[in-house]
Length: 305
Image (tube, rainbow, N blue to C red; front, side):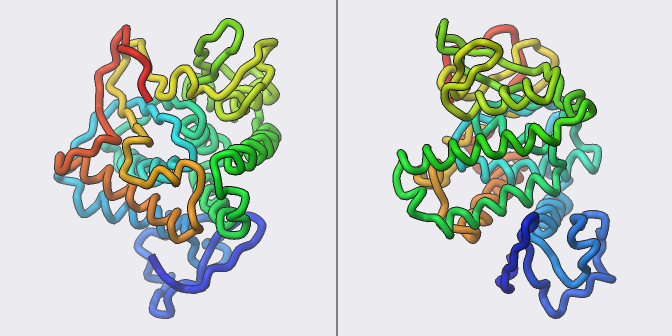
């Protein structure tokens, strides 16, 4: 990753490109984000990470094994979701090459946030907004210095994000979310898990998003909390196709990254680790406990996360 100076504006995290870089020779200009297309002297981390993923896939394609029809399940794990951000760039690259087709996503808490945001915002803005949050880590480190502070801060930001996403949930977005993104929430009375996949209004979609990663949300008359409390990795049970399970807590990232990162450099390292580990897993190399392919079936074992 380039060490050139980073600058920010209200929507993007970007950096000066290397002086030797020549955009006219860019082999894949369509992979640039909209910001880079209109500012050819800038190159953003969104583009860099997508290009890195494409390069990893291109150089290893003949040795990668992945089911063509696939569902994806992402566990909860707080800010370890940056690891999955790297995984998602590899999945997107493989899908763009018609090597796999991603049908559905299921998750709890941060594991639900990733696919939900990706549908609402689109891939490029999803990556940009996720990386932009790294600036909060470095600017307000005291807000993440212990579990309690981190939980309070993250909950506030989760609620703010939910309001922002609600405004973007047009009827077309709601249709795209429905039966595509499955969100796990925990109902308090009676104590049970509910998996939401139907989105009928932007208000209902916002409540579902809130409930999977926040505390004490009124969801359709029921008091709900973080879905990870009852099903942290909500697997599909209808036997339709193979699924990839991503267990964020089984990544090799430090457990302190559940609640915080030191800044953008550490966040980028986590994203790139997700890319590298997933490619290694698909190559059948060193065993990675964060990933497994399973065939869907009617019943599953006890609760896991």
